[in-house]
Image (tube, one colour):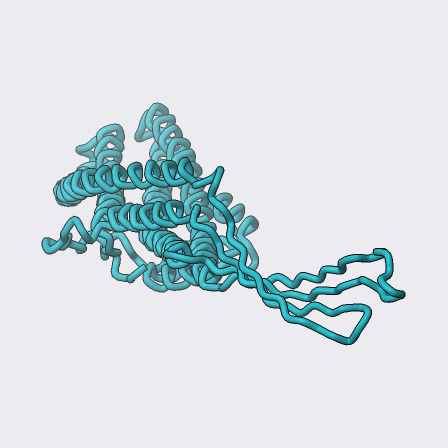
Length: 406
């Protein structure tokens, strides 16, 4: 174990620190996690695009020089210069439909961002719980290695004194080697979990350990009986996508409407100082392109979005029922595991007393102790399974069950 500790100290980052409590970590991650920052940037970009849609079309400045090099008339230059300004206006509901489409699109991006934040909160909770579980498993392995070494020293003393056969020493040595291997595997799993948690939280240096228990706190969380399917974030996101697609249909249907250009200008005559005003009106003629297929494509996309809403409604209800079942099963599993751990710990205590009194063999003691360790590990796994089930339920219900609003 000293070797493992030395290697861990050598590999630990110089500025690493313990992970904060989950609530604090989630708050920090909401400000620092690259995944959430990316989602927030997408929302800001969509909002900016919606604001840009309100802008009017830019006017066009035209300068035209006519009759350059034309034959003179009684010695007078026939050149005429015209300066004009043209403003194009979108008529009908073309502009309002385009603005509505951009605004609905921005709302859809916002809905997806809320889904991403909620999913991230659940993922961070599972990563935090997994890290704590791997840390607890490492502690169990460390305790088992310490007990195995104690047994080995006792066996060596008894064999040296001639009170035990060499077989007992070999058995104790084999048990110690197995405990060392288990500790190495548990330590590697704990390190990997810490690395993954640190990356997910958006910190540069990996955390060293979990010092604020989370598994026991999560075991007390209970589902909300007042949940309604309309609260599901996936359904809300699909509905926002449908509204955006429907708004895009109206925009595509109005795209063929002609744009009216109004031109005002001034004409200057080269042979005199006289000037005259010019006025013009232009319009695009929807002769060849009435955007029929563009509107058809938009309608089909809207139809697909409507089907996604229906699918999301069915999936939401099914996911919620499944998540409730998983939470209930995880609760029963945890209760059974805790009862089994208590019974196994008592069995080991009695076996230890019998072993020290010479009534229980080392082989029997190791079997009972292995059962006690397995019972402890089952409790840890059950606690982790409950957090995973709660994360699924949190996503289905559209609220963070772990105490911090995403």
